[in-house]
Length: 154
Image (cartoon, rainbow, N blue to C red; front, top):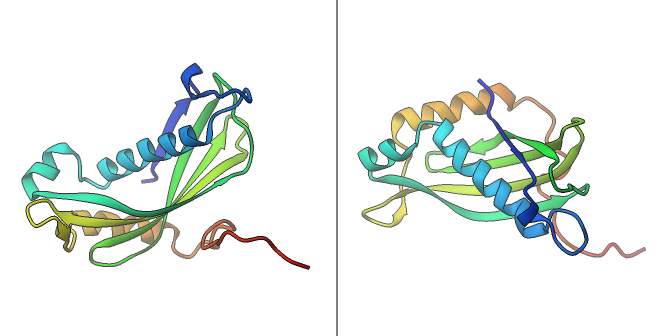
């Protein structure tokens, strides 16, 4: 059961360079992350029932190709790792031709909404995360995962 998020680039997301603005890539990835959270079973009703949510701790975006107004894209997910309260998630954005156009690597943490601190995932949510991890954990790590920013010197 793979996760997919689909969208097209609206006019409002296009900047003065005639392509999707960098902030809008992050908006799309944020919307996909919310859909991923729903996909693992932590939808609105479950968040209320468990008094539990997920916060984003860190992100790293790589912009690989331009996207223009009206172009369709799809975002897929890969759970690179997880523990009792964190998910190391990697999202890949593809254009309609199936070309990789951007990636987002992020660390998410499960939060008890009453205590406002990290706590273990509810059992059924952890089982869903484990299932998604098992689907892809043996795949090669994405090239953009774990990157750092810096100028290479010769």
